[in-house]
Image 1 (cartoon, helix red, strand yellow):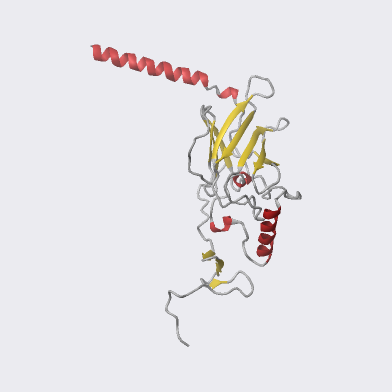
Image 2: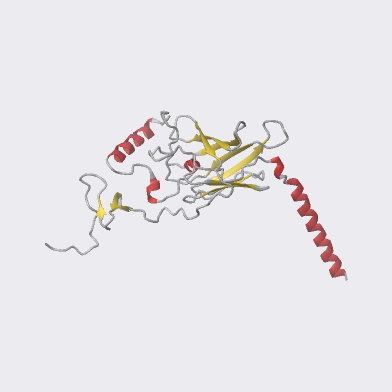
Amino acid sequence: MRYQTLLGAIGLTAMSLSAGEAQIFDPAKYPDMGGQWRESGVNRWAPGEKPPLTAEYQTIFNTNLADQAAGGQGTDPMYRCLPPGMPRVMHAYSPMEIVITPKTTYMLIEHIHDDRRIHTDGRDWPREIEHVYSGYSIGSWRDESGTGRYDVLEVETRFIKGPRSLDGSGLPTHEDNQSIVKERIYLDKASPDILRDEITLIDHAYTRPWTVLKTYPRSKEPTPIWWREAICAENNSHVTVGNEDYFVSADGYLMPVRNGQAPPDLRYFNQSRK
């Protein structure tokens, strides 16, 4: 009998805690960010704007542009199917879903390891943590309009792994991987089917913080289709041998990507004698 009474007390306590947690998390206090958010449509970091690069990294960027013009990949690592990393992930190369929970907001993007976890439980930065491409994000919800409902998610991301670039042009980030990315994420007040993300990059390759605005339209499909198999490695024809990049042709042969490019070193293969 005592055993049954103890179990009953434990059950009532668990139910009370669950009810308390449910009362703390009121979905009505959060903005409606459900549904499918489509790609930003602009895959350049800041079109038409001169990058505020340091002299060192301007030289690196110029060399990258010359290499791309000659057929190479420059400083853009994504052609090898590496994740874009923060903040490039927020180009949203594939549709995005935002899931809000009491302690974490998730951004699920159907691309190369682009999913994000934003901690909103009031935690502090960890003293030691392994760098990852998406970084470590801490956020907080704000009621900036004073309506009693949250309308802005402020996020800071650190511990971002490299190599990374900001877009396909090869805009570099510093090799020290000390980037800090700050965001303000909110629904457009005039149109709640438009999501805005004000992104500020703080990086030693740049002379000042650099802010851009990304915009995502919400799909009007009531039951949008989610394609989960965005596998970059499938049908990827790029091959890196040593420090050189090559391309595999449709008939399966290795091709150069630049005029006059030498073939790879074949010292470990039996060479046919002519």
